[in-house]
Amino acid sequence: MTAVYLPKILIRIFMKKLFLAAIILIAAYNANAAVNQIRWGTTGDPFNGLTITWSNTGSTDSIAWGYTTSLERGNYAGVRRTGYSTAGFFAYRFPTVLPDTTIYYKIWNSATSSWEAQKTYHTAPNPAAKKFSFAALGDCRSSPSILTSVSDFVTARRPALCLFNGDLTQTGVSASEYNTFFSAASNFLEQNLVLHAEGNHDATSPVTFSNLWNLPITNGTNLYYAVRYGNAFFVTINSCDPTNSAMRTWLHDTLTAAAADSTITWKVVSFHHPFFNVGSHQGDMDAYRTSIWKEFDDHGVDMVLNGHDHNYQRSKPINLNVSTSAPVANFGSGPGEGRLQIISGGAGASLYARGSSADAWAINIFNSTYNYVYCNVDGCTAKITAYNSSNSVIDTVTLNKTGSAGCRTVSAVNTSYKTTFNPLTIYPNPATSSFTLEYGATATGDAIITITDEKGKVVSTQKVNKSSAMLKHTQDVSKLAKGIYNVSIILADHRDSGILIVH
Image (tube, rainbow, N blue to C red; front, top):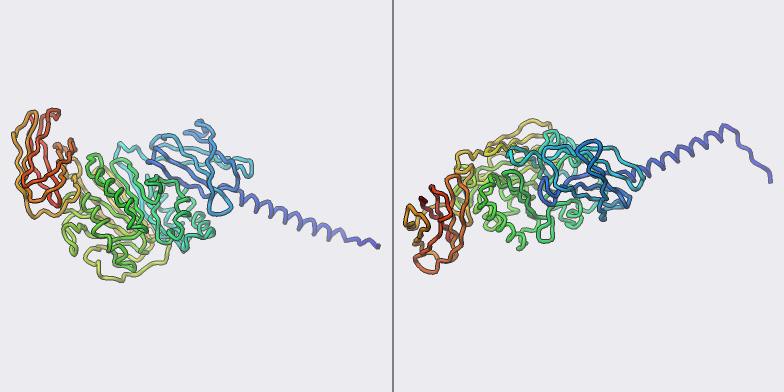
């Protein structure tokens, strides 16, 4: 057999191409083995249950962290779970963290046996100050460049937390679409604690969507939950499953407790589908106005934040207990005051024009533009500003509760517009050790008697049963401080109250 000799120049070219091919293969391997999709969640609140999650192809990743660059708090194993593609998810839940503090951390990449670059995360402001901000956005789907732009503007404002109201991808099951979402929102997700609500596109696979996030578990699911922060209470529900009886019972009980808690000034509810809408999806939640929305009216919810319609809309004050066809005079949580609903569905999905007029009475502002919402809370004042994808202001509204007793109006279950007053007698008055309440409403059944002090703080709540025409109830007040109190009774759709002096 005759030997074949190649010229040296051809050998050098061949070896060079082989070397480049090896470099490309190594780079591709390292890219696939890179830690990515870092995001923050919580199983409790911004300080208790704070959780970091990331994706990687390894099997034994860990995290080292601390409040200084020395990562003095130590190194901890990440808890691995299956992801939506070949990479798995790792999660680490921090112990209680300090407010308004930088966390330094590194992630050990077990696929490459090396440490990733050090990163930082800044925790939320001290809740005792009752001064913080939060943001809301949703519906990115088809335009990752818009998502990057809008979410980076949000991140630059450093909100304490963000509400993302659904529809991350078009199909809800595509690994490549989720990869695109995580890539486009990487800066946003790495820097912000985000509370997610499921959208109708996400609901194609609720299991996949639920598995993405570490969020509070309620009745075995993280598709609805509540988070307390400062003087605000954030409730997320799943509008993709509005008939869920367990969720609706939980919502009622949760808002009832929040309405009775005098330390809660702001009650914010977020979910995907809006109740009032002059866009393409008008009417999607009409069937639940007398059930789910009524919970908002009955318990004095302040803000309702949604997505679904790809535009920006702000409502007038809405209280269906007062009127189903006209706004009320003022925003607020008290009887007769109305809810503020905002649709912020402009994080990248194709925009919708104004269409339906059925809810025109309820909508104040409409703007078919990409957008996000930023709310600055300062105690008893909340200033809400909407920005477009150029970061220009498109709307602003301020809610002010400084005129309310205790910096808020305490609302209660089944509060409705007051048209009649029932006879209520309190004696002896002034009282020293006890008083007797006589109430002559025609209705019977369970009644709630609540006593609040001059600052609006609830000092006593009792359930009593009214089985006849006249309720007579005696109550001990010997442990109450001297002062003036408001005694209210709620029965069916009536609320009546009177003044009690304790001396």
